[in-house]
Length: 605
Image (cartoon, rainbow, N blue to C red; front, side, top):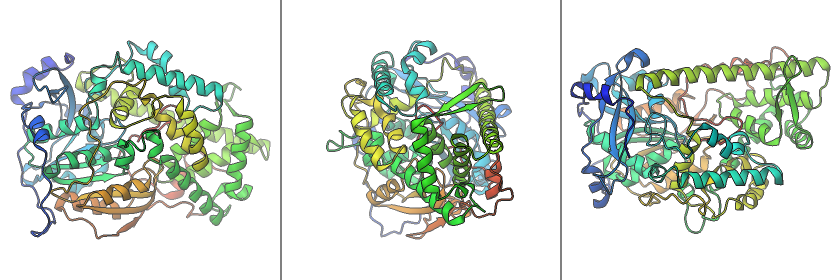
């Protein structure tokens, strides 16, 4: 693949001055001398990556990102079986350690997605990583091939064609009723066909295995003998794949918010079940919601607004029934329709709430507001509910604009202009390359009926997300994708972090991953939101200690998140106001910018 000219001239001038990382002194792991020897990287896999001599080309972008920041790109084989063939350009960002004498090595970050930006999470590292970690590691984020500031996969000629083809997939969390279902399936089929034609060859070269190979090439180019990695959400699958493809090249790998690797990849016996249904994300989200409603009942109306209407579980059930019969119209001050909230949109909004460490307070506010809009107890409370929701939406829009500005600044630093938002293509190109799926998109309709029973609302929302991967329409295949085994013994223990109430990566995924990896340690967290790092000193301290020293926490260790639902008495019992959720929990912590879902469109892991 030919690379864009976006930074070529500048990089050519700066390549000779680019700084390479020194190997550094790598801290030994806690493994004893008597520990079993690790499995070795296969000869085939070693040959694929070791013969690639590409080097990153760096340039200073500290004026945009912050002190000691360098932006860069590296040219990598599109197909590692053809090292002298077509290439793809991969973007990176590095924040160098302040004192090189104290450096242990390089810490690689991945925020999830699939398709989340490694460049962006590396830029945010000073905001969420502990000072002790920042003082000892260069931090590097790689934008996975095909995504963000790397060469972009594009399955459509332009934004207009993309929007027309994908319509329902971009606006509908999941289809409700036969009419929506037909439109959704049709769009999914168009998506698969487009990425299997226009999107090639990049769409057929974006499996997680390719990103793991890219990571290993960059690791070696930066002088690190072994990999130090912190991956969140989908990034846990990347870490897991790397650990199993290159088991003797692991210094320290943390995976937080863990996908069940067997469910993600699939097997012949499970291929008839949609990939995103096998993961049981819907069940995890539904379980978290039910727990919040139970705690609301126990806390009572002095701490949880929803309890004023009765049993919170029954209140939620009644709200769902009402919305299924008649969607809620949210109108602005002039009476204009802002948007209509149907069952799918309501579920998606609550899923977004569950991603936050103060999920209980967000859920409480939204259920209270929507209950008042559906069946107002008074004109004043209906007006207050509408005002609260509008203010909440305004805050979300402001946050989105701020995030867009950050992305724009990074894009300027990288010399990059986006032709259009390719995040749907990025998400599906990885998902569909990695896992087995049913043959026809229409079969998702039957499968999601079972998902609705096991996890009402949340089950279909997650299950439908993989419909474009139907194998009869998504025919772009990566012949070198990785499907297992996930049980290789690594040269250092992998730290597996699972959150009991994670709404996207079911806690069962962490248990399964830890069970499969013979040299791993499971750290559990009784916390809320998606992933656990930053939610308590307990988790953060354990992860930091492991990254710095290789020492894992004690077997069976369980941490408790700082933010727990409904611990404070409500000052104003008239109803919630936008923004009071964080105040009610005292949550001010900066968390990792893990890629999260938005109401409407495709969910993200």
